[in-house]
Image (cartoon, rainbow, N blue to C red):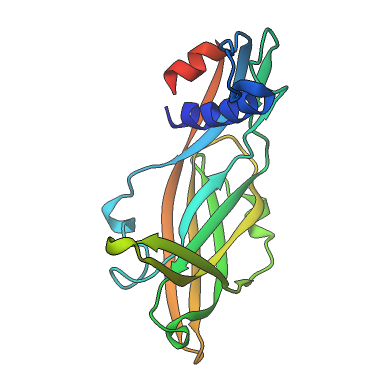
Length: 217
């Protein structure tokens, strides 16, 4: 269902770009959409691997797998056919929001020192073994704007540590991901983290009408 939500978003943007958002009657897209995608879903971790860092509750970046899902044509407009596909190799994406109260308390960088990918058949991923480490990411500022009672607008600045490890998943198969690294403070203090996750591959190969995709979304 999650993949359909993403497909719906892509289709909706394409439909609006073609005039679907104009103030005039617009027919529902009638074309067909061929779907051939791979996504990775995080399996519930085993108790022994449930901690995201050595200290319970310690900081660790969030992880997801980017399979480069792309729509073409644009999909399903009029009588035209379209497609939604993913493309190997896939990337590991990560991010961490540092919302410490002061700049002095925020991390100066994130370092990834080890990445291991092991598929369910026991094979190690060569692309991960060939990575040059450490991978160093420095923060970038991000401003949030929130409305509060009384109509006041509150602005605050967060620090984001994010990036991708490109091309390190080369198979459409489930795998175990192990990442080690550390956050480094402005005073040089290191806070280590370790991530141990299993990602389950899901393949979707089907053809649907554009109307079905909109309805299912």
